[in-house]
Length: 203
Image (cartoon, rainbow, N blue to C red; front, side, top):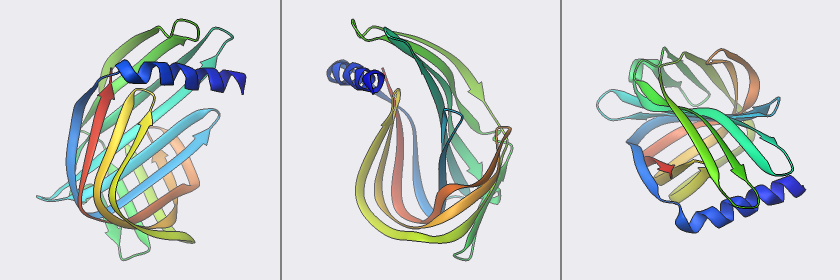
């Protein structure tokens, strides 16, 4: 708890001076699906959306952190970009599938270390591209929702914005994401309408 509070203090102190640069934008119109899970201390999220002009869009984020009494170090990767609509589809209201080699994806592999006392952070980044995703979502009965408006979430060094409307229902996802096997992890499937997806890098 002490370490987590210290991390929050670092982020709070950095927030007023942090700037954001847009790295990707997509207009979603059609099927959508996402998943999120933590395994052995590694957090993973994946979202995929259909859009116009026979294109879909994928956003992937993965990170893990280690803590000491004076600092914390986080590493991971961020991938995003366009897919063909052949790579992602919704079958009726109960099932969605994703199968892609990710040739249109790009992003970064990152590592950063921040100290608790000075709030200084050291960032290291390497460009990456591509990656195989094979996932099947099956509808579950845990929840359903409809959302209209704007939402925002941050994962340390990236900010995700969503504006528009979408309906979703809970789903369980299984398959393989960048070589990691998944089995019945939490997620959702649904439909987006004129939904703007924006990714910003926090500097």
